Image (cartoon, rainbow, N blue to C red; front, side, top):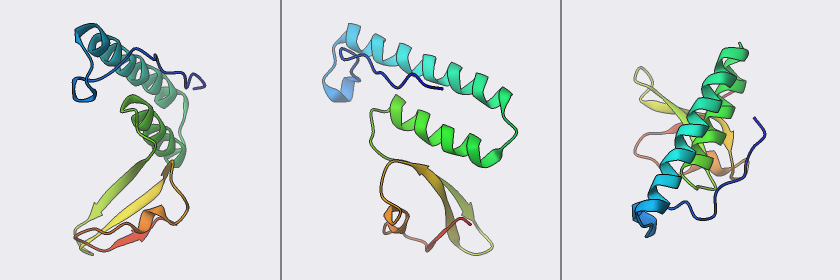
Length: 103
């Protein structure tokens, strides 16, 4: 998936967008979900799939950062997968439960 361009006039209501801007924002999100679905059908690599999911999520939400986390109830911790944006140390953010980095 290579199209990282976002529509400049697309804005969510919480970003102050009007009706037409919200429509553009939602259509872009649908386009990203569709592209991700096609990507998911082509790959068998779970780590690559999670990496792409976090990248698409960040694009769709107009965010610089996105992480995929898995709660591990038996360890009372969360596992943070490599993801989109941030620095290598970003995974160590404060949380109610301990976070350990995926290997």
